[in-house]
Amino acid sequence: MKNRIFNVLLVFTLVIVGIVCIPGVGVMADDTNNYEIGVWWVNDYTPGTPLNYRDDSAVGFYDRLVDAGWNGTYCLGDYSVYETHFKKIGEDNGNDDDYTDAMDIVYYAGHGWTGQEDSNAYCPYINTMHDNRYIEYFECEWGDVDLEWIMLDCCYVLDAASRYLWHGAMDGLHLICGVQV
Image (cartoon, rainbow, N blue to C red):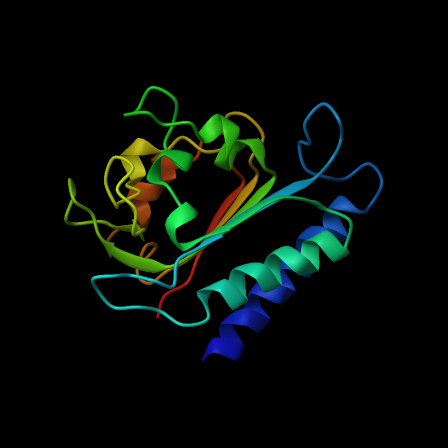
């Protein structure tokens, strides 16, 4: 299963890299016309259910794009992953303009869990308490600065019950891609 997911992500990555390498066709790059990637992963869910290989998926995705000429801006894991990195400005110390929305593509690998405030929707779940541990759809506004694509490699976030809620997080974002396990 791990290899199948990685292969799907690899194909998606190669399509994106192919699109941005064609002259005249590309993403909405920032002023410098650099294409940035940022990734996060969480393996160590203590207490809880630890995951294996989330770092392998995220770092592999990061390395492939950097090898293709993208600017690797950050590659953070476990206790360096903060909910505030994903939250919109003005939403409980959110600073996505400096992290998530400062990139062209972002990848998050970790657990998906039911939200704290909206238990009907799944969300990325982290293990640090920089506000709380849940990145919920109504706290996000991705794409209003530079972000075009976000990959959420966590269970159920875009399942049939909650995917319709995540469209509100897209403000100029072209695609939210998720994994259902």
